[in-house]
Image 1 (cartoon, rainbow, N blue to C red):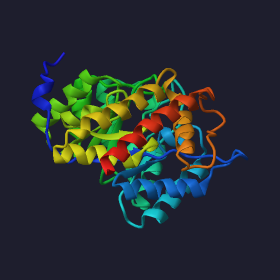
Image 2: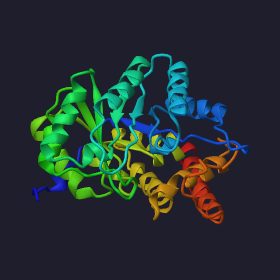
Image 3: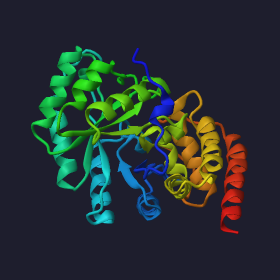
Image 4: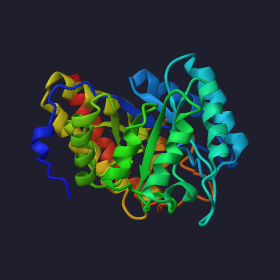
Length: 321
């Protein structure tokens, strides 16, 4: 284990880059609510965050190619040249070989629409040796200008993996790989990556995916979170507090973290239903329905989410007073 003193990593008044994974909302008829999707993408940009589409929050592993492509097209049209991130997802099974050509097709489609690809893991990618994993990313890099890597805990996806530090360092050494979303749900490996980044490649962006520790931004991580889709406006407010050295950062971060602990409790993939419930309570989407194959939360959760919403609204009112 690398020795890291987290206090040496803290970066006060740093400008945080926030990327928010967009929830794909559904209608009562069980179809994608495209109008609500459009509005949520626009709302996220207006708050000052960068949208990320076709992520786990957007059911990327449950929707078909035509829906994923339609998401990209609509995002491209809404943003009109503004930046966004999009998941390059390739479905496979345990024992399959790395599907390089399939990844390259996904990356090309994303780049053609102005997005920054983030390479979702797959069995064929993560079940290789460390050397072959790095070589696979290098293959993808040879055919694109910029991409993000992704480390994903198996509590969110069975094909995910958190690489050992030498593998991570190998991926980080690829020039076209400009950043990584790290979703181990643990602080220590992320601190190790931040220290290594600071020492060897300061321009490399580490996006925390730790919805249980959203204060990782204090230590130099930026973020690409599913939790921020619940409240992009409040995440943007929190980020501005940190940049300005405003001590209200801590209280708002605590309130948002409580929401994260509740929404991402076991089984963690149920957070997408929590997001739908919360956004429905806020009046931002028409239903709290999710993809039919997604993990469901009990309807009784809405009472707790409503209480959390009330506390957040009270905080905003006090800030505005």
